[in-house]
Structure formats: structure tokens, C-alpha cells
Length: 160
Ligand code: FES
Ligand code: FES
Image (cartoon, rainbow, N blue to C red):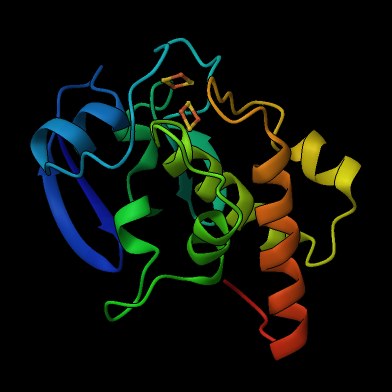
């Protein structure tokens, strides 16, 4: 089957199997390996990407169900060689250790801040509850999201 997708602002037509998962299309066919495969059963959040601005689990999403949509992966977050506010905040807060969970956290946090630019700590924890990290203990990840939200407020940015 053919699907038409805009991936990281580039439109393309891709040949997929009817049961092919979005994560396989991204990682294996297009070699966008920033999206991570963790559990494969919707439990860890490592495979989170944005589909039409909403966070989805690429390990549970059929590529055909994304047909006509806009997909954003971690590779599309930096613009013109510059990290975005969330990526910078994760580095500044030491929220990255092994880094395996980081793309999923950043994509989920990006959706959160676009939806709710000033989330409380509880709201951040609630929104990120589907993303697991085995290294950091979450504290620095929460701080990184708060830091990015504060920066966004300071500079009056609408979307990150
Ligand atoms: S790999 Fe998709 S949720 Fe774990
Ligand atoms: S930084 Fe290693 S799993 Fe999160």
C-alpha cells in the first residue's frame, strides 16, 4: 500500500505493508533512528512521535493510519542546526543520562507545552506519566520541562 506522509516538514510517498507499524517505517525504511524502540507494547513511551501535533506511540500506530498526516520525530525538532528550547533545557538540567528515553520525553513534552504553556509540576508529571526513564529518577526531566516553559514565557514564544 502507498501512504503519503509529511515527515519533519518533508512530504513523501511510502510503500508499506497493511500491518506495518509507524516505528518500522521511521526507523527501518527512512532510517530516522532517533525514535526509539523500547517495549513494543505501548508501555514505555520511548517511541513517541507527534502525529498532527498529538503525541502517539509509533509502536502501536499503523503506518496506514497516519496516511495524509504530519509526523514530527526528534530529528525534526532542531531547526537550522539549532537545538530547540526543550533540547537545550534537557542538557542544561542534566536530564539526559543514557539518552534512550530522551527523544520520547522531548516529543511528549513538546506536545504538553504547545497545549499548556505554563504547566504545574503535577501537570508535567501527569502528562509525562507514559514515558519511562531508567536512569534519571525524573527530577531533572521535570526541571528541564519547567525551564523550557519559563524560557518560552520569557521570550513570548507561542510554539516550540
Ligand atoms: S516502544 Fe512504544 S511504548 Fe515502548
Ligand atoms: S536517560 Fe537512560 S533511560 Fe532515561
